[in-house]
Structures are given as C-alpha cells and as structure tokens.
Length: 199
Ligand SMILES: [Zn+2]
Ligand SMILES: [Zn+2]
Image (tube, rainbow, N blue to C red):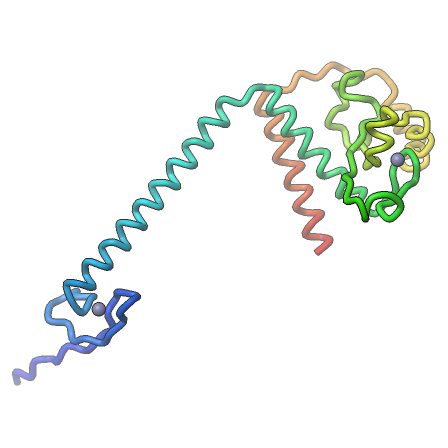
C-alpha cells in the first residue's frame, strides 16, 4: 500500500506570524521565505546579544584584575558592614540608644556600621563582627564613634570578657587578595541568609 503520509500542518515559527501551514519539505519551520528572513534576523539579534554579554563579562574580569588590594579591602569592608547593619537592624545605636524612629525614618538618613576599635587603630579587627555594630550617623561621624558610650553598651551587649579581648593585643594580619575576596563572599552570603530568614 502506498498511502503516502500527509504531512501535518504546523504553526509558523515566526512569532509575528504563527500561521498554520503544511510543510513542503523536511524541517520546514516557517510558512514562507519572508518569515524565514524574519526569523534569521531574530537569530542574528540573539547572537549579537550573547556576544555583547560575553564582552560585558570579559570587561568585568578585566576590571576585577585591575582592582588594587585597597579596592578589595574596601569591598570586603562594605560587605561586612552591610551584614552588621542587617544583623543589628532591630537594635538601637550602640552609642546613644537612638532607634530609626527617633531620628531618621523621616529624613531617610543612613545608619553606619561603626568600629569600636577603628580600622586605623586596630586593622587586625577591621572585619571582626564583635568589633562592629550598627551606629547612628551622628555618633559615628559627628562624634568620632562616641567611644565612651560605645564601650558602656558594648559590655552590655557582648559581655566584658569579649570587650577585654577586643581591647587586648592582636596579632598582625596580612590578608592575601584571595583571602580578602573570600571574606567578602562569605559576608555577602551571611547577608543573604539574614535576608532569607527575615523574609
Ligand atoms: Zn509565517
Ligand atoms: Zn548614636
């Protein structure tokens, strides 16, 4: 029996057409040469976009390579500070007990993550979360950290023993760039975890 199978109608692949048509040859996916051209343009546009994406990520890689050690330190510090601000989001300023409601919900002013021992005075503790607490901008910037008040509340918050440890001597730390990057990555992850937990 020579019952040739009647090809089944399909819909044109051109998203602007979608007309039903009966394929005349194997693998035909569009109804007409015109739709074929239209699809070709789309595919070229897609190829162009993915090329642009590759270029963007290459630029990113090059920029990453150009970053100095100081850039990496700054980025890692920003990641740790962001984590601290979120960790302490429910707590008042470490130095003056002000809360967001007191001074900045209306003005939208930011909160800082303030070091108890400053980065300059004790770089060994620049990434130590026990040494960093959420602090109002006024205490951190205008009052240079408001250290005496900071200490009083720090003892209440983490205990005298840990404060003594912070105030004690610390071995010099010389982070490699890879270590600094790892710190940044780990604190970004901690921040994501906190956000997930809060959601
Ligand atoms: Zn078509
Ligand atoms: Zn304050």
